[in-house]
Image 1 (cartoon, rainbow, N blue to C red):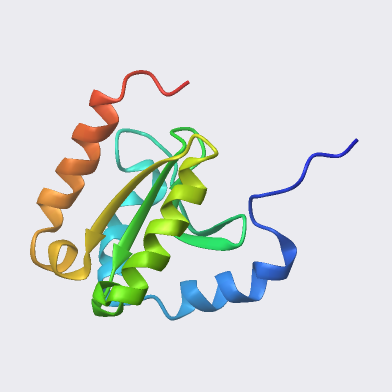
Image 2 (image 1 turned 135 degrees about the horizontal axis):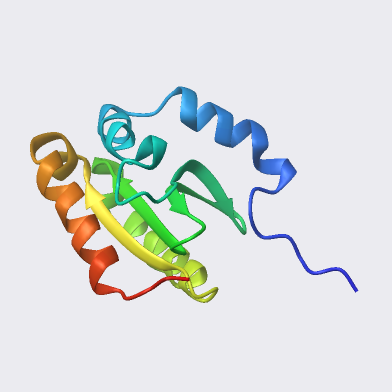
Length: 126
């Protein structure tokens, strides 16, 4: 029996490519600090599908998803959608961090430090 594929499903490929190409400033800013194993030597990927959802950043080694939320995420409907999405992702044992665009753009050092502290406080992920 084959297991159901939840990561980077083929039907989502074009969507993920578009999201990488059209990433907002905040996502590009955070990516500069996560790419090439710059954060504690861990590999992060951009726009990774987990089930029917696409995460902004994901580390397979850490089982950690990171989302950068723009203004559209702060409406009532979007908050409910994000909550359901986060519950679904956490049901696979994946941990989740969320930052606003403003936090990333105006305090990137603080955001990177928060991610690093979270990783260090979470114990050995492997």
